[in-house]
Length: 310
Image (cartoon, rainbow, N blue to C red; front, side, top):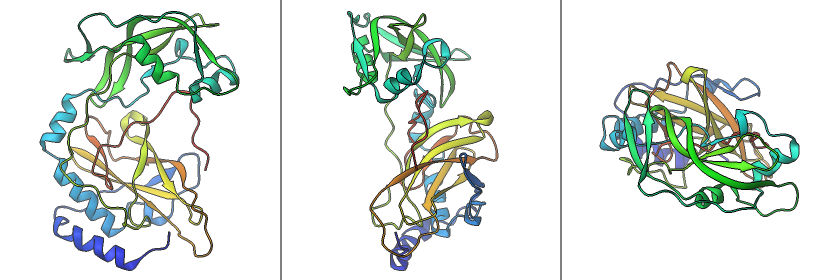
């Protein structure tokens, strides 16, 4: 992961024509549960990364894609609610849930005719096709591994509330009865809306990771919407990832990079680390974008999951 000046120059030449609007308004970052960031994270992203962030923001702000995104259903919180909104009984059950080790003992119902509705506070709503309970169960049952398992004995259609890019929404949900639990495990019974076609092209694979790298996903929003936690990747011969934010009225563009690249023999291991980015103001209904891909950062968090090891 050594810096290649030629690559950096090529990227700068691509971006310089689109980097004339405004100055970057980056914010400091801090690795979740880790040490303070290097100086570069304190609102001073690489000039090339800052230019790319402005390019992405300019393309999205006021665009048709942004309007489609705001009109859709895009969760920014887990689409699963654990029994009673509390922890599972023990480490075995938590492990079974995290890896998706489930057993089914019983019949699962089909979705009733007609579509479900996602409803936001204030009364706005959106129709969405209902999924059968078996389809939703397959989202939970992702593994067939030795070890502890959670057993589902039935399901009924109900509702749950979760945070979305438009604020809290009530959505149809399948309520799965778990053996040994008094309350059901809820899982949203509708899929998120399709992502609109982005108005800006992604960067290519030859971009140096010490300048800009793709994000692994959004895992949480906290602090009244001012704190975003994302997964950023890095290698075995560096000091870890850093993420900066470029904020506008319509978007928050996150730029990830690898800091402190070292010389010497390195493995090809790719590591993920959770990084928390503090914003100047709550994210609200602004679109959270990845500077590298030019797309909304996908939500990847799950309740009960631990941070990926570094």
